[in-house]
Amino acid sequence: MKLLQLNDPHLSDKAPLRRTAIYLEEVFAKLYEVRDIANSLNVDALVIPGDLFHQKTATRVSYFLTMRVLKWIADVGKPILVLPGNHDLTDNNLSSLIKQPLGMARFMSNVIFLGPYDTEWKGYHFWGVPGVMTEFTVDKFFTKTPWQDTIVVAHGPIVVDERLYPYEVIRAKDIAGRAFLVLYGHVHTSIEPVIISRPAPFSPTMFVNPGAISRGTIGVDDLKRTPQVAIIDIDEEQIGDLLDVVDADKISMGVKVRYVPLKTAKPVEEVYLLEEVQTEKEQAQSVDEFLSNLVEAKVAVVSRESLAKAIDEASAPQDIRDLARVVLEETN
Ligand SMILES: [Mn+2]
Image (cartoon, rainbow, N blue to C red; front, top):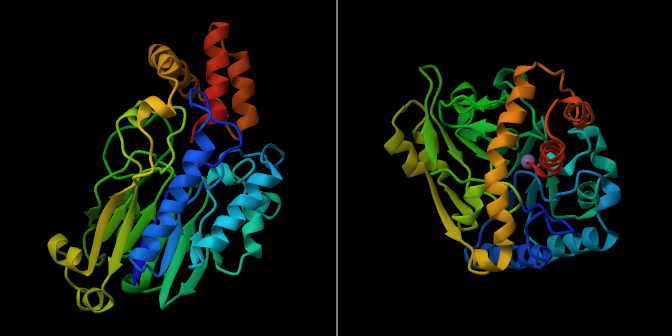
């Protein structure tokens, strides 16, 4: 089986802050390039681990944009396995999907929605971790399907390193071992495909994140990285043979991953308002400090609304509070 993984398109009628007006057209150009790659490499399906749309509120997405996305889905033709990301939902709530622009994709015959349940497709069991689910544990969701047939598609904040983060994350090592493959997004910076093992009786798990195909507002990384997609080649027989082998080199013979850079991605001068990016870099540090103070203050952050309220009440200069609110709205 061959999959194409396409992360975080963040489609939006309005260009994100500090992006030039070509934003939407650039993302669609990349989406059509992805379709062409899918056809030329003859993949079986596309996998989108969330944030197809950028605006979390349905009324902020035009009918025109929603219809254009449905048209792209039809033009792709191949099966598309879609997981809702936090930007595809209102308040990170999966039950909002039915009324969201992404929810309209259920009328397309080639779309298969993934979620915290077992989706069987082509002999594999796909489990989805939608939105930002830091309470996610492997035991909650998928203890029943066999490792060699199980693929997790996740949006939530998975990290493969050991660093400390000022927000809750899902550690790769905590969820490794139940599935041979974890395809994830949300974090817009790519990682090299990495195999992470837990001690027996668990088997190793390969984690893949090619990075967002869109370049949004926040990350300084966005200036350096090339938008790309992942081609994942799964050799069913080799995987089956490797059940008891806990050897990174050997499992990589069963799953081959390569990243394909997108040629339609424009140079940074054309996509960013670079003068504003410079100002942002200078302000970023104080915003970081401000936000981590909020976290340390143990504000009961249960929703965007309560965080927005906490920002309003915080004792920081007005311009920092304004920027923090923008960050809250734009951040992934
Ligand atoms: Mn996201």
